[in-house]
Length: 66
Image (cartoon, rainbow, N blue to C red):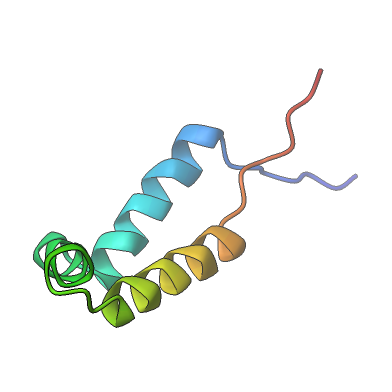
């Protein structure tokens, strides 16, 4: 018999949030958005978006069961 523990959607959401903040603290997220919107420099925002996508790929939500 094999027992498999799957994380809940809430557990994954908490792990993602922690990973987002570890990779891009709130002040760095704000800086990236301000650079993109106010200074027309999207490079940081693009890096942040790519990092967040990698985190989502690494921590997918569990399959919804019907």
